[in-house]
Image (cartoon, rainbow, N blue to C red; front, side):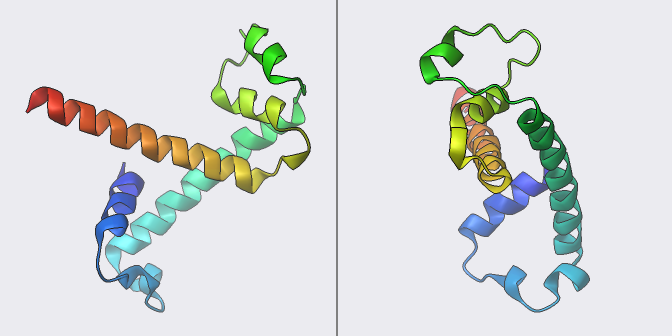
Length: 115
């Protein structure tokens, strides 16, 4: 949660203080953010490597018809669909985008519902 909160804060901050030299070493919030991002990157790398090692490339139509009871995740769909342009960095960026976008839309919906 702290990573999402920091990402939201960075998107609306006027001064990019996190770019200061050694900010991630001496600013408490930035130290936590760097540690949390490292943990998140490690988990995503492990999931991506596992999905890539068991890849079964197919067309979009075949993937939509496939019954993935073993691994019904969106990551499995993206890995099997990508084909040649498959890289861990692209998959990681796609997953982070979905995580942050999902967080934002859920938060907005709850705010409007409860307001």
